[in-house]
Image (cartoon, rainbow, N blue to C red; front, side, top):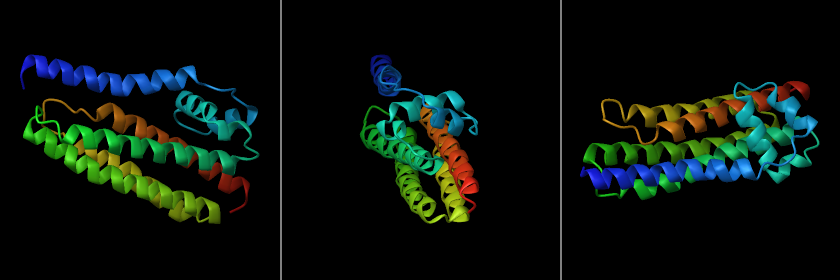
Length: 185
């Protein structure tokens, strides 16, 4: 890849990653007691607090199940946004063919991950705890498989996206498990 092409590619990628986070940080809403309680059970508390507090549906959440639904929806939206990003990147002719192939594989993995999270939302609604856990873990594994596709390559353009997606899924699963436990399911 030519140095100038690489520079613009990296700059574009950085903007696609950093700007949405900055916008989300500036749009943070009020952290309610319910959100604090839900995020106490997560491995990535600051991400949990920032994502849930920035979603208007969380502000009026009456219980942990609603917050779990919001957290799963946020993870699902992240998978969809990542799919859109990958669709753009996979057609970038300035990328090495091996990177394009890794991105094409990531596209398949993120399409599957979004579907798994949608199934997880349905499982949460009916209290199917084991199904929910299975599908969220499959979605997490999809991000891991995306990462694995970059093994041996000079750069992993998906590393940060995969990491954030993984953390969103872990947080959503933790909140869902607490909500199902509290509901006695």
